[in-house]
Image 1: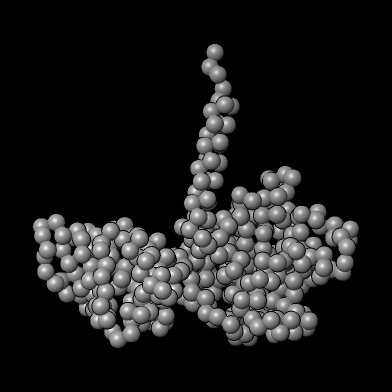
Image 2: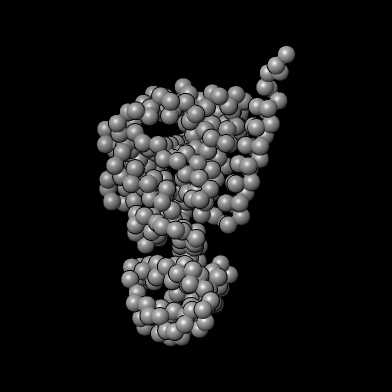
Length: 343
């Protein structure tokens, strides 16, 4: 923790606090072209001024307390990682701004990281940390939540980490190809050409974590296999890290089929968004049924993510909330419309 010294009181309403820095930390904290500093100044009420050895905060006592806790956390991240980017700043602002009290386990500098050959991936929210820990301690985990919360990206990262540390011998990535009605034979090209459009998000994630040539070799050797859900029928997947993505579009019988593919020394992650079901009859979704059937089985854990875990553009969080409000309002109107009339 950084050492803070109160310089002096400017007036009854305004104070000034100095947060000391080690050599070189100001450059890292400020970011490229002062991007991080601009973010902090835009979001915080306290005024921020800098020198090579300290940051000075001025403003009301409450504004200074909030700004100081955020700066201390950012400095902790710098001292742990040796770096800081705008995503870190946005994460700390999201979690610590206006926070009356926060559990130590929910402080960003304490979140886990996932090591992959091309990058280290830092978790960005308490629910993402729960997701990671659930996967470490269970062989079957469901991650359910809206777009942008890291469900698929973190699943792929954990699979790549498990493969590179030899916890598993292969990765199997699958999705229900609902848009094609699973009738892939009617599409032009070989199997790879047929399914590529549906698996682009998984390829994109893999390319961030593995060198392109190495990824190609792993796919050519079937060490990483990408296949439609329907193609897993009748197989047993041992020594594998298996991911079922877009699971909301699997029917209940397909979900059962997938879950029973799990072999010895394997782990499975199921990711999906209950609000984006593309099935003609949404009630048939295996993702909706799974918590009702499996929630009491040891070794299976369900993790819920929400708009607070959205790690894409800030607008994504606002869009998720807007659609939630719209759906809730629509449901309330529907319930009101169907209320019986007392005669």
